[in-house]
Image 1 (tube, helix red, strand yellow):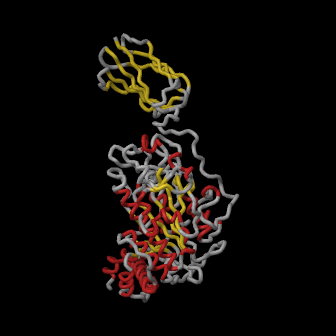
Image 2 (tube, one colour):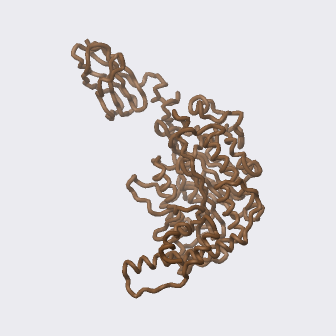
Length: 545
């Protein structure tokens, strides 16, 4: 293969580029530069749900009237169709699509003790951009501001530790797909192979020269040539072990014939073939359900149908193949959806979400209870209960056997275990870890009767009085008493609803009494002042003579 053809085809085969220096594989896939508590050959499978999965219609608050009447009057999953599971006191149920697949799908996995449910996962000051939030989840870093560059992934930084000069026999990570992920990007190099077809990868590898071509001069051309040559050598190197594992491995389960299930089918076969890869990543897209999300027969239901079929077939496969004790999987989505349905029979970008953990070695529990009972931290989004980095930390420390110090260096800090106990069976309590994120006590849901700032909760809180009223020249003083600090906007209109202008715009006022001089434009007659205090709305009539 000539170099031009190689460059054209490289993206099909390899995400690991540059001058990656890695350790030799022995019983454990890697030798670490850093002390670990007991490295092992455990495997992690990451299932990316791209687009932002609707966690509330995945694990349903099916015994809560507000779900049907207030949050999702048209978009709820009917109570008689949802599948109750876990402790009945939690009042939660699974979407019926989660019963699809081998042995009753993911529902059957929960019944057999192979599924954990983590409710309310997120991070502080969440970003609701698909691209930015995906980068945050992939990087394992919550930036201080939107301008902060996220250039490495948490798994990329984890695998930066293997600094021996020899290539391992097998790749650290494999992403089943054709596009590199920030997840695997290290300080210099990417730790993942991109794989769609093992035979095609092997053919590419065989077509590439394996001999190192030396250059006497250090020029830009020679640097680029060496870069491409290094990539080619790695394709040649890793394609052999991947092809060998693929040919040696097998599948026993009957997988549904769809793209997502076929990704997991390939992963199970490579594991069975003896590939010592530590992390596999697969993906299922389409979860950005702003419109036409549907109920039992809609887009979201179909996506959960695919997810349940693929994961349950994979779990059954690795159990029958004898590898289930060393394989754990998690689902990840860049954010959840808002509790309130929108006007397009869909749901908009939200915050706290549900994660699934699956495998023989996960705790068969529901962590976080009912996600719908989490308070709103603003007018539209739920507070989070668990930091997503808690899950990453536990994977590194418990599942991979990394030291506490190294885990902290990868994530830039320590994080509380999920419910202080963790979601993996072998996790040990750790008193040195910080407390869990504090869930706000005040619910800022603007439609909740429990929210003192709700316009639906009419109380003696904020008071507004205009004088003189009537006014001869349109000049008034607004006596405003606020019981909490708030941002005030005041507009006015005539009795027919015609907009007459904005008198105050987004101005912060402390709690207490304020006197605002205002002047009403427009002709004589009845004027309506629309006073917006935070998320609460007030209306005041003033007559202009």
